[in-house]
Amino acid sequence: MSEFDPEKFEEKYVHYFPELQEAYKRAFETMNEAYDSGLIHAIDQQVLNESEPFYDEGTFTIELPESPADRVTGVVVDEEKLEAVLDRYVTELQTELRGVFDLEETAN
Figure 1 (cartoon, one colour):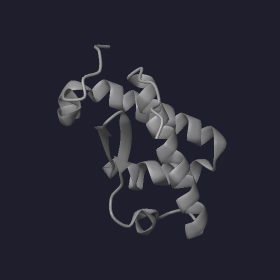
Figure 2 (cartoon, one colour):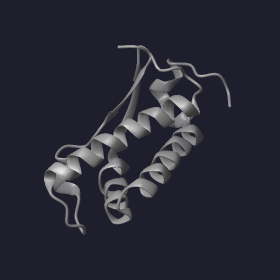
Figure 3 (cartoon, one colour):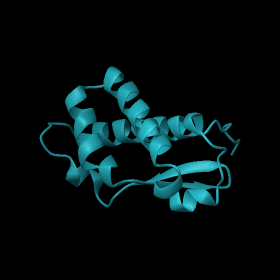
């Protein structure tokens, strides 16, 4: 892997596609081991498939599509639980992005 360049991350799918795939895969595996697999698959395929990772000033953020709870179908889950699991999933994804790019977590 080449050294991470924040400016290149603006064109992340050109410069860092394999790394992004690896981070999403690792986050999925971690979440799938800890939570109901049907729910994790639904979040992965119906919400995170249209998410957008960004990097700014030492922090990765994940922009989710509008109304993520409305996108999740095929599983029975209350909105509060869905939001909690989705928040945890996003946190895991941010952690994996830092790990894949070998970046230290910055203090807020």
